Length: 438
Image 1 (tube, rainbow, N blue to C red):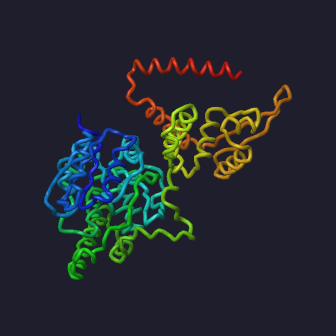
Image 2 (cartoon, helix red, strand yellow):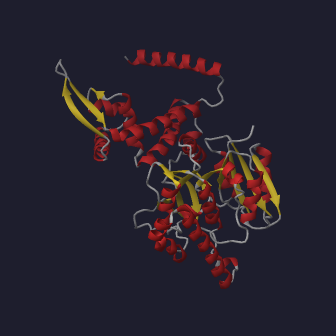
Image 3 (cartoon, rainbow, N blue to C red):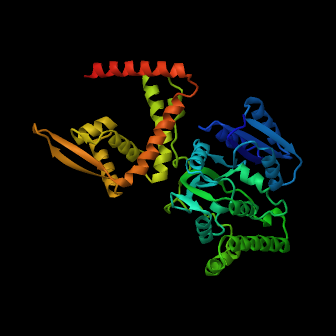
């Protein structure tokens, strides 16, 4: 059977970063993919590293070719790809463990031709989140193009690696990179693809780490004359794209915005210094799991690992909706039960202090997601009842999806008979625990 996703990584003299890149792919929670490592005539140890991965994992295929540049290398990999979807990485970057699953789920649930996601921009030990479209909805071609027009040279739109493409669209229209263009060649491919795509989805989760080490056109040894000619060629294509997407009246209204593209650099923006907001230390932006806790056996280790696994999946929903993990846990809890005998009982259930619970409740209330009221029951006891607002409904759907992913990860590889046996044993254990605690 053909894989669902073909993940393409062009490789050239990348031995220092290649392990990090490939390991991030092979450790994906989503497993139905092939990884195409396209070695562009590397002169270091990259080719041997690629072959070693292929020997150890059947999902890895290696393409060895003479050096011809990144565009031609990607083209050859696209021609050999077998997946329904195409996903791209650069060999000095890496992805989060949920990257492929998040992209595929968005494409399938919303029946989209292109998924575009936020990403992390990495400079040294600092990282900042980058994105542009805040609409958590399906977009038409015209709507997507209008967003793109506002920031015409932003990496968010121009690159391949924060997107998921349908291979049938690429093949039906013979879409490939232009090997003669070494500035915005990714963007020209995207513009051509967008012309044939109909439904777009912006994923509000950063899934990719882009390392700012790439060279400029000047460092590639191109002359000023050739550089100017190349930029003019790209701009002319960009201009034609908008003439084809918009009608004449709409184009005239937006013509100055289109022309701005010629003036803008490929501005993915700089990571702010530590003293400015928006930047944080690399490693604090996503959930980190201590190796110490993974190398211990016993009840405490089991509890730690189960919690970290659940947090890994909840984290995606939390990032998408601008929540902390504490806020996500609390919403999950209140979705299961809206009334508690006291706030102390709720804090005890969540394993947090009452002060921490109060702050989390206040934050969720400030976001318009819940309200609560203190009640007195018929026998004189007090209760606290929580009311989740309609705004919380789509967030709860994301959190429930995270729970389903968590369960699927725990039970991967079980046969139907084993799953049924597991359910019976789990129910028996649950009854034993409850009877002991009562």
